[in-house]
Image (cartoon, rainbow, N blue to C red; front, side):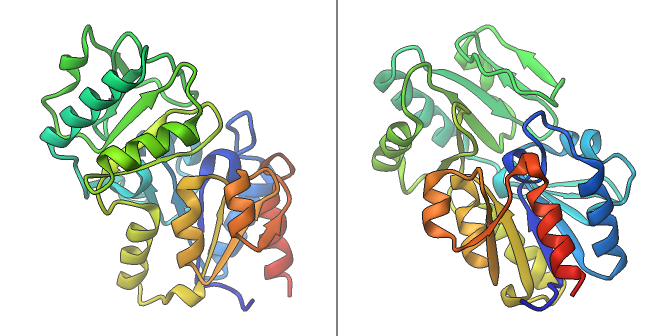
Length: 265
């Protein structure tokens, strides 16, 4: 492909190594392509506060799409825009139906500033110290929420995703970003792809001039929308089946390796 005007990349399992770090090689490559005039977008299920922890003031990205598309974060100004909150009645229905269907299920919610989680929610991610325990599921409600996270103690995420799709499909978007990670539920129409398309439209950049990297089911719409979609070698089988482009794994700095080869031409 020709050199892209925008590079969009997932973080966990793609740009980041498995220990949630950003390698020196990757940092150097991002600096180089931004210096050449290409914009960089981080597209992640993570909240904006993690972006600062990862990138600091290193000027490595232009924009972060957070919460799987629900939040837009301007890296330079640190401006946070909540784009798509989930209606309260939808969240309550999601929680009620999944609690009835999956024994031991746990819930957490993301506000954009912090995560609230109830006792059954067992997932403990790295890179996030803004986590607030609450006593009951009912204590999760009452704020504008951009994402519901569903911890499934024994359930296969593919099967649980099918359950949400079949019972709540028109009301929400549901995906997951890593093996044994929670299901991630957002307002209907929300995706990394949709928000990336909005950002690129503001920049007058067509999809054909966008290069995207990903590893997980929540990356598939973005990889399909971009002119060129690339899967890292460690990607979920559904991603490897859907995306022709390949690079090395996240632990081998696959994104940096692909960019280095492309921009050296």
